[in-house]
Image (tube, rainbow over all chains, first blue to last red; front, side, top):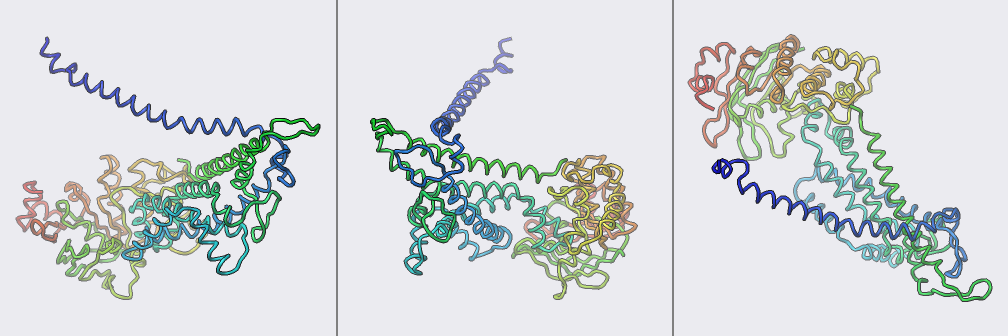
Length: 309
Length: 259
């Protein structure tokens, strides 16, 4: 009887493994919870402090013309327009470029040129945004005598977005099985058409996710804004000239007024001021909402492109 | 429309590595030729040289010649894309295009090769090809559903339909049943019997019973030795190979004393 227990299913080895298993489970779950703390905390802070500001109708329709830290209200339309324009232009420039680079690296690149390209992309992906901004400034303002403008921000953002999209697209293209390429070749389909009609559609979902990640990364960039376009509280939809508002710029503008915590109200009484802080959190929440909306759209797009079985 | 293949002194390389050497073989039209032999002996490599798919692997190349009814497919002025339009292929694992419906999978070759075709013509090709692979009745009500949603055996028949939709002269099959269950295997083998009326078929198989069942001619490949390239040992009528092979190595392999 006791021999059966010693060598059978209830042997001590099984018990020690059970303990190890529980310990590992607790550890892994604990790490997960630990990682969730900042995420939940951040989300809660931004939503609870920012919701008040963005639920006013004027938030989505007005700008900050003539509104100081002593005044409430105003909107973020000027910042929204600036950010959307700058990010849209850099996305339009980055995505085709990055996808072609990725196609080259995965489908065509062999030897020295491919290795050099890959190395350059690695360097670019580690490039601090402020250095990209300085480079654009040096080329377009110092050398060619141009003016600071939103379009220069777009160019700096291209340098930040391209490596992200190249890397994700590259990974997605590598995930497409060679069997599919060979199946297309075996049907007498030329290589470029195979890439266009078989490889890219198969990797579509992943590529779109990569693009959204890239947009999320550049939409919150601040250094290129400070150096290349400054900030304006007025609505300026011209990418080619003048100061331009932007969401990160607006956050920064409000932050500079956080120190002014008291002021006089209409009747001359000294009161606590919270307008700048409200707008700061509101802008932060707006930025998060925009990026999340993009993410959602991308997911829906990916789902719509799936065939039913 | 089926054509004869002549392989003359064919060497296949992967970079500097000589994988198969000195293959001489004639494959008759409207027949089934089976390639058998142990793993790594180069039978799949030889198969892939027949539609110039071997060379899509970086560094892979061949020496010698392969001709289709006398035309050398490795001649300088021959575009490999054209060769592959003439010689279709079915792979070891079913590989329907995952982004395409059943319908689009069948006409993928026609649509992607070049031109636009009229919808009615495409419809006809789809029905003909799917009937040709005995799949029509099973999928005719779900042609716009994903090809990847079919069972493994159905997927493989879909891939065969895709290959024959472009009306090739020759059909190469690289272990087409190795990932299928016995019932699906039977369906494919029956299909091979029907297709031999119209195509020249070359089939690589690990399953010797399968070679005996479906093929007219059998080619036995083997490694010349450890670390040496693969070679064609013997080719003959399937019955002769399995009952009365001339080469001792073939006899050993067939009877299971080796490999």
